[in-house]
Amino acid sequence: MNKKRIIVIVVDSMGCGAMEDAPKYGDDLNCNTLKNLADATGGLYVPNLEKMGFGNIIDIKGVKKENNYSASWGKLKLKSKGKDTTTGHWEMMKLILDKPFKTYLKFDDFIINEFIKRTNCKGILGNYPASGTKIIQDLNYEHQKTKYPIIYTSADSVFQIALDIDLIPVETLYNWSKIAREILDEYEYGISRVIARPYRIINNKPERIGSLRHDYSVKPPKDTVLNILQKNNKKTLAIGKIYDIFTGSGIDETIPTKGNTDGLNKTLDAIKNSKSDFIFVNLVDTDMLYGHRRDAKGYKKAIEEIDSYIPDFINNMTDDDILIITADHGCDPTYKGTDHTREMVPYIEYSKNIKPKNIGIKDSLSYVGDRVLEYLS
Image (cartoon, rainbow, N blue to C red; front, side, top):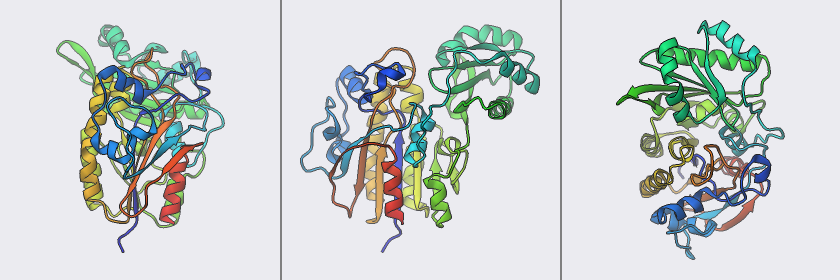
């Protein structure tokens, strides 16, 4: 008998329909990342996901319903309060939040002054909610003149710091981000993530460098499935920004990625070679490059690229491996603004040895963690 493993791939922000309480979060009940991006782009071409039952979850243009599906399929609701990356991933690992992380329209003068004092950066620019691509365009001239960091937030619980890393070293950006994390935690500001946002001037235009982005999340307040696995001598491998989301807690090995293609290749290599019991993957481009930037065509291509890797994943899985494909929240690229949308997420579970079924609608993303514990116990 082979070693049992579970591979969970989170397609960041690939929601599949608004939660009933979406209006409380400023979202329309018509928000539906998968359906709306497919409608806007002429349909998805995902033959491998289609065979698994992807088109059975909801109506998706270009994706047929499959009677003889090869995987279990269904939808998961978000039980926690919020609609951000940390909330979604923590809930998957059975840490449900009854209070959302705090959001701000601007950060208090006390916090900004403390940041300036501890970093010795002399001053800051911004301090308002904004799209990252727009704010660096708007404030880049002042940034070049003053060397002040650009600080901004969004509808999500984030404190974001942008620097031109040809003007100020990326190591300084990372250090300032760590200092911001320390300040926010020290004064209990309840911010989910500090995000270091490096950019460069390319063809006379500021461009964010996604491969050098780094997230500094708040530490999970209690054990998650990852910690439970470690305590039971199971090895955990994080690919992509999973390590950042859990601040390394419960993770034995981490592999950073430079975007989806790199993440997919590293996931395939892990399926072939890793001895870890649990492989936890985040594919960030769907959210960072396409959801937030309201790029439906880019989002479509990203999902189709993920689909193209599925045969190689399956061919290199053992009979005792399980592959789960899901998401953490929505980010409907056809919706207004640039923020996440509060949505249910799709669930696909494939195994060569387990009979597939329609799991229906589960009331929490923690169904993922339940499956991990149940199978690896």
